[in-house]
Amino acid sequence: MVKLVLVLGDQLSDALSALQSADPATDIVVMAEVGAEASYVPHHPKKIAFAFAAMRKFAEYLRENGWRVAYTQLDDPENAGSIPGELLRRAEEFETGTVIATEPGEWRLIEALRDVPLELTLLPDDRFLCSHQEFADWAEGRKVLRMEYFYREMRRKTGLLMDGDQPVGGKWNFDHDNRKPAKPDLFRKTPPEARGDAVLDAVLDLVEARFGNNFGALRPFPYQTDRAGALRALNHFIEHALPDFGTYQDAMLEGDPYLYHAVLALYLNAGLLGPLEICKKAEEAYHDGRAPLNSVEGFIRQIIGWREYVRGIYFREGPDYPRRNALNHQRKLPGFYWGDETRMKCIAQAVGQTRDLAYAHHIQRLMVTGNFALLAGVNPAEVHEWYLAVYADAYEWVEAPNTVGMSQFADGGIVASKPYVSSGAYIDRMSDYCKNCHYRVRDKTGARACPFNLLYWHFLIRHRDRFEGNPRMAQMYRTFDRMDEGRRKQVLEEADAFLDRMSRGEVV
Ligand SMILES: Cc1cc2nc3c(=O)[nH]c(=O)nc-3n(C[C@H](O)[C@H](O)[C@H](O)COP(=O)(O)OP(=O)(O)OC[C@H]3O[C@@H](n4cnc5c(N)ncnc54)[C@H](O)[C@@H]3O)c2cc1C
Ligand code: SF4
Image (spheres, rainbow, N blue to C red):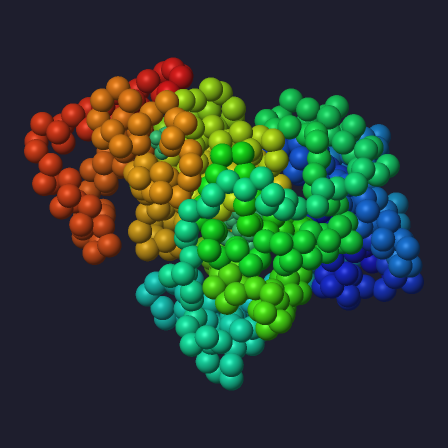
């Protein structure tokens, strides 16, 4: 009997379990651009264009390789508007009641698929290195689930950067050598840009017509949309950026959005690249003397460590995870996250480049936009929705643990052992933003005091009961308590006044 083989927009891999277990001679691949997926959050137009163009090209690739593909474009009049709707329509068309799918990366879609009145086989997504069972076994009996220990298991499992059962270089983690600020360099290489083609052009026109009003610039469109292009981007990264990736991974510079970052997450998360192939290329560069250990280890850790770990957390914690709000933060997300004017240079830079590129690197996400939202007490569900909408690499399994857990501490400390908060001093140390800012990073109070400085204390005092006992935070409370009373009062009052102005929609 004919089976339908569902391939979702982030499942564009030959190795997909659903494709592997189906038969091109009899089965039919179902792919669909549907309104429900394109609009459940206001996705950045570049993100939608990337997904649709990559899907259309992958469908073509499958056809060239002997598959029959039933592909629905967004503007097809027959389009049922949702993945379950499309499955039902295709089931009727091909007179079958059987569907094979690989587990989607989002509870919402898993639940929707389970509700479809068809015989569904949901296969594990084995493009990841760690299965749900392996993660559960690792987590079993542990009081805290720290990424660092999980990462060591993944090093042992993959054999990456291992010398027998010991880590190459004698240490698991070389972050001590990293985290340096960077200098502007006009000659720094940037990732190879997409060459225009008919498929991409048609998708860009469609997205402009249907999603042109969403936050974010659609054109120019720089990203690759097929495997060959993604491999070009990978090779470019290994050759030009990996050697300095580790040293400058926390640096931020005005007008230099990528620095030495890979800009590969969108390809990896969509399935155009695989985690192991990326890591092996990086490891090879180390063994050939083309990249130092601190960079290669740091990079591999992000992929086999953080990326696999956050996925484990997402599936272990269950569907309510994105709605957690351990700190009971209720403030609305300020308009400047959607492009309204702000005088804070760091926010303007991170949001501006997000608008232009659907990209910001990790430290911008964590220590600028994430840090500010946490300090200001923004409702984490709104923060989550923003991150899910604006980044081309955002899918809930990876975005939610990073946002709700790591960045907003809304899971109560499952992902992060302490909240990632900092005053302006951190941003000043790692970037050149502060020197051109309306605010003065060294001012702790007064009309021009950096808002991060004011809100830092406000946050700590708001949550004193929860964090004072954390040994890694006790020192900060002692510092606050050593200030004279008048100053303590002034800081907190100015922070309140700032938050009031912000909530009234004044330009801050
Ligand atoms: C609030 C917040 C939200 C985030 N949302 C997403 C998201 O939606 N999708 C996403 O892929 N990453 C997310 N991240 C993690 C990280 O910021 C991005 O993976 C990274 O910035 C992508 O850019 P890059 O490819 O240049 O990565 P690089 O900095 O060059 O890192 C290399 C690769 O490592 C992986 N990686 C690095 N850090 C992480 C991490 N913390 N979790 C998972 N994978 C990681 C990515 O696959 C990335 O391509 C988020 C981080 C924060 C703090
Ligand atoms: S002074 Fe404060 S607000 Fe301005 S760029 Fe620096 S950290 Fe950001």
